[in-house]
Each structure stands twice: as C-alpha cells, then as structure tokens.
Length: 169
Image (cartoon, rainbow, N blue to C red; front, side, top):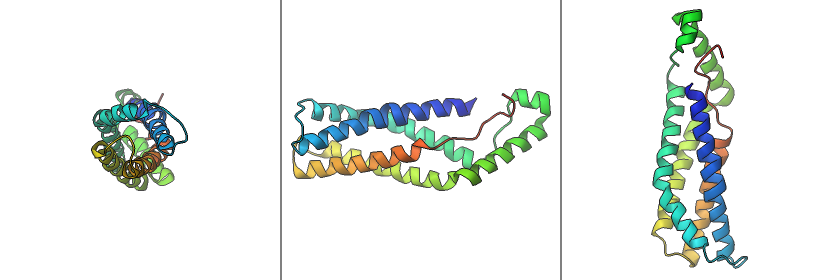
C-alpha cells in the first residue's frame, strides 16, 4: 500500500525533521541573534541541520514526485481488488476516488504551492550555508527568511494526503 508508506514518510519528514528539528533550530537561532536567550550550541546545531538538508531534500522531492504522479496518472489496481472485482471495475473505482480527491482537496493547486515552498526553502538553506554564522544582521535576516520558508512548507505538507491505492481494506 503505497499511500500508507507515503503518509508515513510525509509525517517523518514534515513533523519529525522539518517542524521538530529545523524550525525549532531556526527559532532558537533567531532568539539567540536577538539576544533573547543564550545558547552556545545553537549555531553548531543549525549548521548540522543545514548539512542534513541534502538528504532531507531528496526525501521531500520523492514525496512531491509521488504526489505529482497521483495528481497526473490513474492508480493501478491492487491485485486483491482485481481478484475480487475485476481489473476494469477496480480501475474505475480507483479513478473515481482519485478524481474525488483531486476535486475535494485541490491537490493539483497544493502541489504547485508545495513545489514553490520547497524551492524557496532550498534556496534559503543554501543562503544560510553560505552565510557567516553566528552573528551578523545579514545572517539573522537569512535565518528569519529561512524560518518563513520552512513554516510555509510545513503548513502545506500538514494537510496533505494521497488517495488510497486499494478498494477493499
């Protein structure tokens, strides 16, 4: 069941890394840069998160690619559904579900927003990687811009789901 695997990977990326690690790390660095808290490790931790981005970007890109595939293509029927309902009936029911999903969730439009948000976060993280950390007004602005981009991507990934790839559970 590809949809369950996708959902698990989406949650791991969005909640496990993006929201609970990157956004928290960026917020901490913003507070340090503003002089609101002291944390000697915040810049080093942020540097590690920026270094992790290459791997995390691959995960995000694969999630987006799967979503794009679901938006653009019919879903192949599960073998169990074919055995019980036949190939044509299974394909028809899955296509009805996919089109309902497209209409109700506006998945095609959300996909475009997610792709933009992902590109923006990628650009902002590259800028942070190129900046002189820890403290300058320019690096603080870059971190704040990155925080905005990360939050935008997280918000858009949060409500996202893909249609089921099977009819009978």
